[in-house]
Length: 306
Length: 285
Image 1 (cartoon, rainbow over the protein chains, first blue to last red):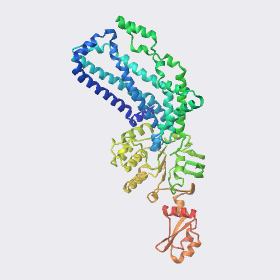
Image 2 (cartoon, rainbow over the protein chains, first blue to last red):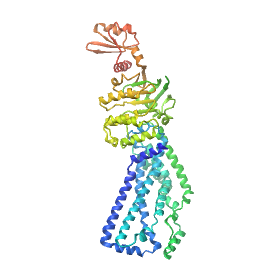
Image 3 (cartoon, one colour):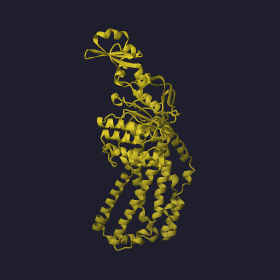
């Protein structure tokens, strides 16, 4: 266990991008927030107008105020996916290239533990860091909004902090990253395998075989099954993990119109993991991912090229 | 004395080239073995097989383990520095210490610290900020602080200046080595380690051409300075190698009784370097 913790820490030491990349994005978002809030708003809109506008939203509909949370989620998720992709391509390649693998192999750590620590890094560590930065940025934006409301003479509690459910929002963000990790297991496994396999250009080994397969299928069978499969694997988790069926919309809409806050519902209402957990795609994904990772472990352990 | 490494017909091929021809040998506990051979002779291949980094033919046991199958277990008792010291460039000195301390049950941090204190390496530097010599020093500090039964050093002092090399070998002998440990060293600077060694192994074209204790070497090999007039007599006793120094002939004899040789001139035990040159050229001639 101590060894596993040390290995996980090592990945963060080696890859400061895990936290630097989202923090840079957070800084940019906050800077533009500061610019908009304290320059654009004060010059062209006026703080009082903002408070008046917020006040016109019926109480039941005020949770709408934090509809920018999903936007943050999308931005940070894109950054994270890029960071993880580049991390994975190098994960079993960089130390072979600079030969520091000989140092790692001189320590009593099984190759399987090493490879699995990189898998856990991609599926757990980096998403956890990203969740923290996402929620942290949301909180800082909330504080900025508080200042605007105060400058406009409004009550930040009534207009902002009371209607915005912080815990639900955090749960939603964490859930979104969690299901994405589960869904991406085969993709992560594939990139690790490409990284363990490549003698050079792991990027090419990651990207070209799937593209080749898509083209081959198109030429030979004139079908696009594999391309569809890939597309589903990239975004297909959303309809499986979030239930936004018509009934629910109906109830929410009614609540919104009647001003009945109870009926508007909570953002966590759309969370429903059952279709995901019972979908064969998730479980075949696990099996395929496990095969890829097992192959990566085998290569790491038995291939000699030093 | 227990046998630490037992090789039976161990061989290794890369494609059609046989890097290591079928070799059998045993290395006992408490020895310091110098593994010496020209570049590409198969030294590194042999070491890699012992360290579990490469598959091989034949049977090889290191501390009772099959190194290739049981590398992780083996590394609890074996330490190595491969070729030029290769530490990851991004790691900080303090992180390297923390990491090895956590994953290695036999690492003693205070020993590593004592070693580092003698150098100019600061703990918050990254490896990429250190000079080449400092990286080697750091790697040596990490390895010497591990209480291992077998230490394998492949060109450990490459890139270090002579002062550090000397002090490294001194501390290797005084602070590290004892009868419970075994060390295998390869180096091109044979003169620097020859007083350290208890055993010698020469390897050429993937074949072990000599494996003997230093005492046995002193018994079996003699070097004689032969004057010009005694040259014919000397050659008659079939030296394995002859070279000329200031008009006199230095002849190297193998398995010729010393009382016979003493008639030719003054006898002495050949240096490892001279023996190496003699053996290599003799064999290939």
